[in-house]
Image 1 (spheres, each protein chain N blue to C red):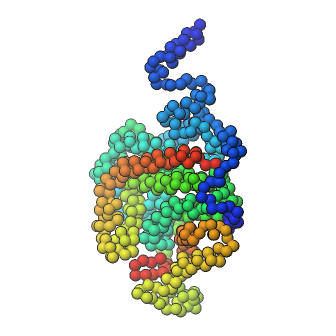
Image 2: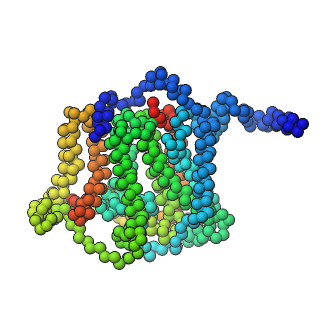
Image 3: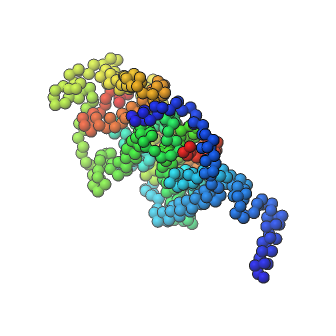
Length: 258
Length: 280
């Protein structure tokens, strides 16, 4: 009696105009619905509806590309939360870190997750490259997608490096100082590099000063790295990710033995 | 190079060999639905990763040291851990090389891999036997030159960038004698060998010994190897001079790091070649 009423209720709901306007197919496990589940879903239609059997084996893919993308999403979400509380200004930045730690509800959790997921993403992107190399997946016709992958790897490191400065503590300022000191030695473009005197670059006017917005890591660098970290690099990485994922499909799905 | 033999019979792999109809049929039959099989994997994987990172983030706090102070340089000052391999290279090369040229070549070198690896085998499955040179080179570069140097930088480098065991106390006053010499004035056992007896000849301030050695290493050695091996090596014939030149330059430049490390550790060599503009 009750089940019959529930069934009638269910039919009433799923056949209503509102429901059918949102969901174009039912959920019974039929081959047709398995296709539609992928093809009629904007989030899932990145996948093909069918895939070669080996491609779902964790032992083949290690899930590393997917985990890297997942961590990018985690970083985007936690990063946006952190942006609500953090000001990239010399006087405020460090105080805002303390504010996040002691005053903001779940602030420390968000910051921890952002930090650890960032380290995690650096490692997973390396492991992804490692796996792709070991399976020879960069070979024709996937050469260009490997190149896009190398660009994404570089962008991941740059994202992590620019984010490293933002806590504005001793660890970040000196790590970024050491890291960007290299730019001083850029051939032709750095004031300590080979042929610097030929070009005429100076400590205040060379590749490093362009990167830092000054001759030392200071508040202008903080603002510069903040904008690179929160706007420029994520957008660039997203664009290359779109190409990367699209190319997987266009190059015939993920690689496999013939 | 066993790979040379492995690819001997294969033609230049411009495109994937076309699958026969039987292979294609087998491939089509070997397909599974993405929903549920792949999406299920992705979902479980997401759950595991999220639980892992959530627990990790609850248990371990991200580091936060004292406020940034430009007047107080910590010793040692370390780059972010993933760049410590590059910082480690600074021990052996000047910053323009270790910090700019070599990292750029790592990126460029990775990008050209698919265009210079003409071995059609080993695409889409794990194999060592069918591509030993490619895998050995990559593993050496990734595991030894990248990962090991990072571990060395993270765990074994202390004040003054001196070596410490992880259980040692970091002594900022540790004294390490600087006994490095340049290759041109290397004098083994007071014999003047191998180069000191030449008296370090220069032209326009450029050391000729280092110039000769560099030209031998990057120029003569690869050409001699190419001419010697080409008649009997189908791989070199298919590779052609341009791709060969790219592979060999990138390979030799990569190997210059362990080579320089060896020269430093065995003979305390500081520079191999000194010029008025740069030193190597």
